[in-house]
Structures are given as C-alpha cells and as structure tokens.
Image 1: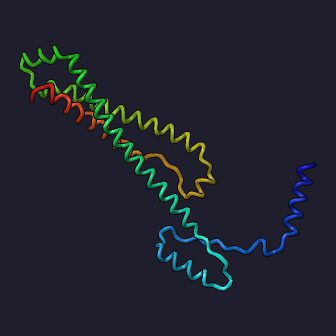
Image 2: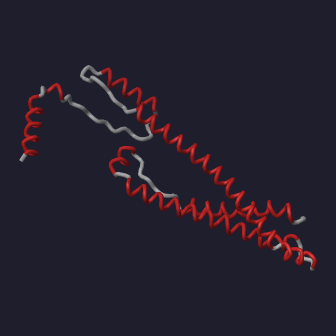
Image 3: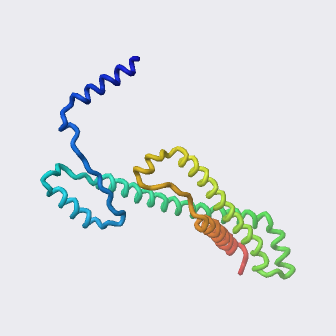
Length: 198
C-alpha cells in the first residue's frame, strides 16, 4: 500500500510541473558511414533553426570510446609481443633440455653417420607440436573468458555501445595455431643450431 501511495505522489508531482520542463525532442539516426564533415554541417544547419535550442551528437562519448578501443588494441599488441617472446624462450629452453637429456643418443646417431637434419627433425617436430598445443590452449582459455564476459554483458549495454561481441573467426583461430607451430619450430631450430653442428 505504501508503494502505491508513493507512486501516486510522484505522479502528482510530475503532473504539477510546467510543460516547459519536458521540451519536445527529436532523435535522428544517421548512416554509420557518414563523413564527420557532413555530420558537422548538418548539426550547424539544425542549430541555425529558430525552434531548435540544442543539438547533442554525443561526439565526446564517441571520442572517449575510440580512445578506449585504441588503448585496448595497443595493450593487446604489447601482450602479443610478450607472449611471442615467452613462447620462443620456453620452447627454446625445452628443446635444449631435451637435447641434453638425449645427448648420448645424439652422439651415437652421429657416430653411425646420421646427418644433422636427421638428428634435428624429431626436435623440430616436438617444438612445433608444443607451439601448436600452446596456441590451442590459449585459444581455449580465451573462449572460456569470452563466454563468461558475454554472459555478463547486458544486451542494453551492447546496444548502447553499438558493438555486439563475437569470438575469433575459425580461420583466425587456425592461423594462430599454425603460427604457434611455426614459432615452436623456429625456436627449436634456433636452440639446436648452437648444439648440433650444421
């Protein structure tokens, strides 16, 4: 009953306000690819109309969002460089340790006439597999985080920002796995070059 009374009081307060408290407003949708110069020209023409008091384009919010997106892109690029260095270091160290563990086996293979390519090939394949598995694990973790964030993202917030969150396309994900395999093979070759004479 108390809630109903409060609602009636608020309705009577709103009804008592003058008409000027609620000015008429018109919302216009412009094309997403409209140039900034055309938008500024249109805003200037609308402000010149005698019946228009104010024109709000939310340009400051758009600029803030653009700065935020640029900052996110820069942070992700920096993170990609750090991950790249970590992959190279980890796979290189792993290959050196594997070669040290199998040092006697490698020496025996060299004594019976095995070529350097024959000795290096298993290590390079192992490094490539490690890089591919590491990239696949990172994509799986990213997918879990994406599902958690998307589940908590309100649909109204997505409509306000104008961006619907989507996960990496399959070609990009497969390309990342292939890049991880290539990085693993490169790190293995670089570490083996110091330990196996060419």
